[in-house]
Image (cartoon, rainbow, N blue to C red):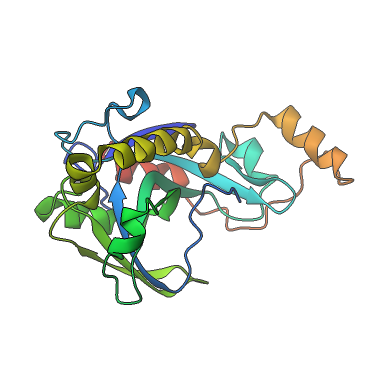
Length: 235
């Protein structure tokens, strides 16, 4: 299997087993709303949806190329890391103090950020578990990052959604958030990985002064990414 797969947090596909728009976690506390919802592209996100939307792909990494889709064994020859499944979605980050409480003054002034979040399958699984009891459409998530280098973080569901409150009480700000989010969402698959052909990979490597020929993979050939992806999407 290759390319991108659409996921949600429902039971249909549970987990069982360097761009400016991408969130780069720093140590601290964040409060976020999930805005990857049906209708976002049309400016009318559907808050009755059963779950936020996610995109997933198997991707490879090369220092010269960055992240690119794992489209088969021939692509692995250009990777310096094993094929890994990554999952992405789009978040609205709200202004908070150092304890995670909303900064009402900054919110009133229209302060917010929208970023894509690229996560591991383990973190996605945690969101599945949280969403089972606390709808991440109707509630925000508090994220506490303790170690940004290794992306160590904990998740706690909030009692309400700032995004829904803004929609009701601050419609002009809500419209701005949706406008920004629809643009950021358009770049989500690019943030996950570039969909390159073998010829494009070889050409880019040649442009950087490297060899256009495949190099020996530097990872364990026993790694079975296809089986992992089958587990994740429940096939």
